[in-house]
Image 1 (cartoon, rainbow, N blue to C red):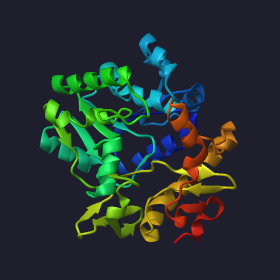
Image 2 (image 1 turned 30 degrees about the vertical axis):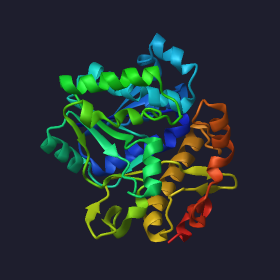
Image 3 (image 1 turned 45 degrees about the vertical axis):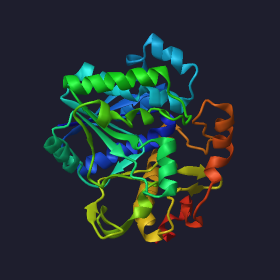
Image 4 (image 1 turned 180 degrees about the vertical axis):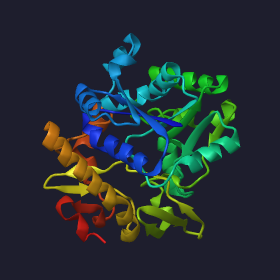
Length: 337
């Protein structure tokens, strides 16, 4: 049994359901603990009765201390603050051997068991995944800003060593967790930078298929896509199977357009990854609107509680384009080849 957890509110419900659906397709035996950050997402998911899920309302784990910091942090910052909290809640409450946190905008293309086989071979207590930025000036700048590791697939088990790391991370996030890049902290991510140095049993995930994302996609090419099972190659020819992709930073625009922000010009690669996902998201959104009148109109997202950063995010971030082939028409997704 593989135990995962994730968190989101109703605005990310479409992505959360897509994540669950992807696990159903590729994984035989798992439980996804879903932490709902508003009533609407909780009510809908409880009604759906997903077989491999446990639905948890935020009131079940929110303490007085958490509710205090919630007042001063943006929605995104508060979710980041709660990442170690929800992992700890699963380990404490459900007594499972291990729990792996997943960002809700991940999507699995093949069985993640290969990642857990690696974890077992490494005898790891904790697993973190690198951003895998390019080793060039831009990549080093991105790492300096966002940290070496991405909070997206984070494994913790019940060992004393693992719980020590988790408690340290929880306390740090409670103390400070903002969308501001400082030398040693940025949201919940930069806290991970020195874990392999400061703690025992921390393993960096090596399988390239765990952690493909817009910020490293330009380092790979498409090798094969057979029935949704995607094989990729590094630019020097090393093949690997895509396990999960991180659909971070997709921005919906007015007039049924979307900016996928893939960061690459390779249409073959990005369309093989993004188009099936967007189609599934559209299907989920249609069902949620039909059955629950839940709509996903474009919103001006503000990840930071800093007023200047928040203003720039909410007004301009969605329209930042590096490749015009990233702007897609949601009503004509079949035309993209």
